[in-house]
Amino acid sequence: MAPEYTFTFARLQDIAQDEIIAHMSDPRVSEHLPLLTFEWDRHSLAEFIAAKEAYWRRDGLGHWAILCNGAYAGWGGFQKEGDEWDFGLVLKPEFFGLGGRIFKKAIEFARTDERITYVTFLLPLSRTRLGGLARLGARFVGEVEFEGIRFLKYRLDTQ
Image (tube, rainbow, N blue to C red; front, side):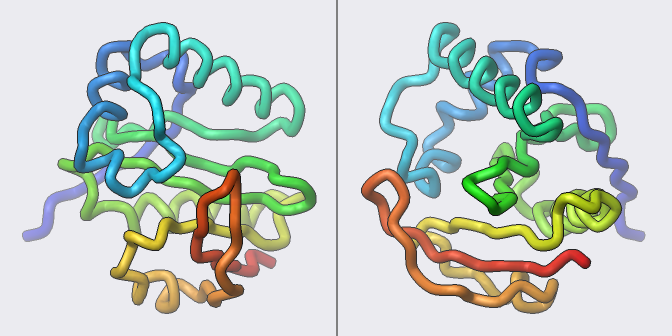
């Protein structure tokens, strides 16, 4: 029998600082985050959370802390980039295999939000297992450059 998972979304500021710092300092996480070029500490975490909260204030939506059966599993959500809603997901290594399930829950949310007619995803070139995106209905748009780094861009219509 497969284990049961319940996913809930919370605010990043409600998660223990040391837990997020340990998560984001794990080399298994940072290998797929080419924009991560600094050491995580309390100061960088405070700046990160302040930036994510600014998106919530500006757009009414942003990144959540993701809880799996009540335990912090990582963070992710929707961030407005220009006219597009970009979806990001950064999980702790012990939750890597649950990304598809978490993604489906987030997309269920997006489908109920009339502002989000589609979502985009920027994936680092290091990501090679991309079949799940196609199975979920996402289509490859092309390679794009963001902050000097090349990414694979995908789009998923939600309406």
